[in-house]
Image (cartoon, rainbow, N blue to C red; front, side, top):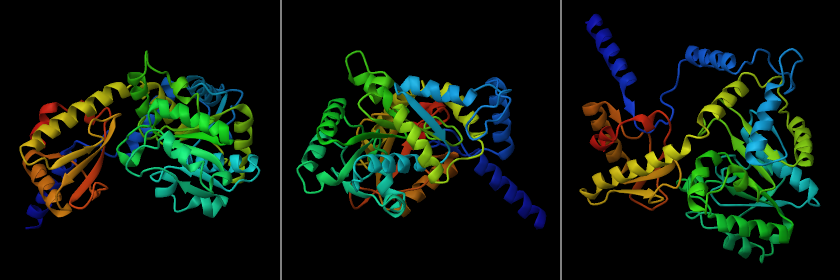
Length: 386
């Protein structure tokens, strides 16, 4: 009996490991030894043989980290930058720096779905003593008209900074139109607001701007209206951990001081910076193809849903980047049971978990990111599973 139970348990575990998950952009969680081996391979490939110390190069090891920072600053058209592993600390630094420089004004402006409001437990207020004005429709991208309306309110004079998330993760990767970005910049200049981009997923959004403008916009042109930009290396790029804050030299010099004040000056950026640099080199030009895959898959799923009373909706209807939200018209329990039946039959998982949908009662949704792993799965598998 014991032997039979062990065999049954082993088969069950083997099946779980072999399940093909259609929602994992970079595949399932890797074993520790594989992660460490990948880091070693990256360091050898990038010719990095000496760690940095507090972000500075060792004489015998070259200035690889500073070169990485300069490369990103050049690509995004900014004068200076610095890299760090505590991503959200970067946003706090930007907020606090601008509060100090704008006559100690006490608030910033952001969309209601901003990461700062949704996921950080009020850190802007608890740590920085900065209030927030949530502006705009929570189910639509932050628009110039929203900011213009805010400037005519009693709260306008207390604001020091406007934060625009590019793209808006919490509404399916929708993106503020370029014409609105330009108008928002003019509004910020007229009202002495610092204009900051939360570009944690900027790389995903770049194909949108390349498609929608005459001749397309480069990354530097997209970043040009913003006084400062924050980007992440572990989300769409698939790095291990890390971000950069970019702006003019004066801003970055003072931001580095605030990094120390927040206790974020790590002894070394190794190994995270190695993984980030390798991911940046390998993945930053992959997002056009990934967006096209997202559009293709959404079309497939919509065709499958049409024969069942349109039980699926997407926001946006057509993906604007390689991120989209899929809403299922069903109870969470029914949807999970249907998912599990597909796993049992095909060994394919169409989603991992569900949240209550902002489309209203009766819907549940999941976030769908496309990357090198699930982007390489054949259309036939998606179609059969859905």
